[in-house]
Length: 220
View 1 (cartoon, one colour):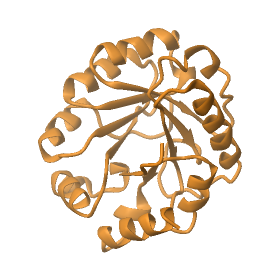
View 2 (view 1 turned 60 degrees about the vertical axis):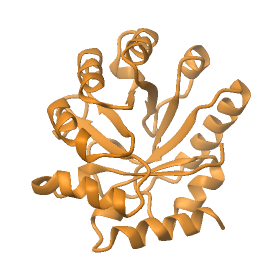
View 3 (view 1 turned 60 degrees about the horizontal axis):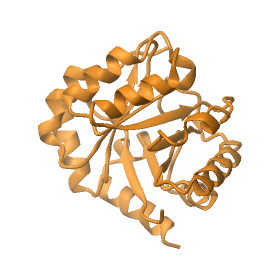
View 4 (view 1 turned 45 degrees about the vertical axis):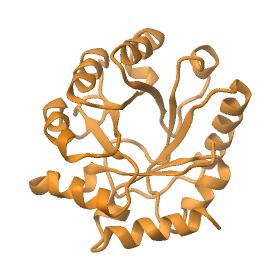
């Protein structure tokens, strides 16, 4: 899959004006809007729930990509599906029955993804890759924005790309954590095709300039 996607993360947006932030970043060229959902249980932070997704859905003309950093998963996955999410991803170790949760998300009309923390094995993919629409490799430890990219994630991206190619399926390979203009090309070279960026975009005065610079790196 050669079409790249840039997905700005709302965790770094101005929460006092989220609707306008969504509109502004889409106008600047965002392909997806990324929701980092944190429960202060699975990760040490608290963000937003399905009501915020429902409120922002009318402001987004692009897919809403929900990353659940929560435990348990199923009830919130269902709630975000009903709130208008297009993609819903979760961490395998946060679900008692990974296959069942993937089925629940897809049965609710969404694309389903699995998320792998920096120290997590990709082994579960052997058993469920036929159900997965997206694989998200975390290049930071989840819970906070503004962290530095963990270089070992590149090897994991390479391994995930080989698994996807071997499967013959149309699966997005996403990377999240410390993605910036100066490292997005390395992540793409390793096999990623979808890039989550938070503070690298929302922390800058000109969203379009950053997104355009990222795209220039991706076509080199």
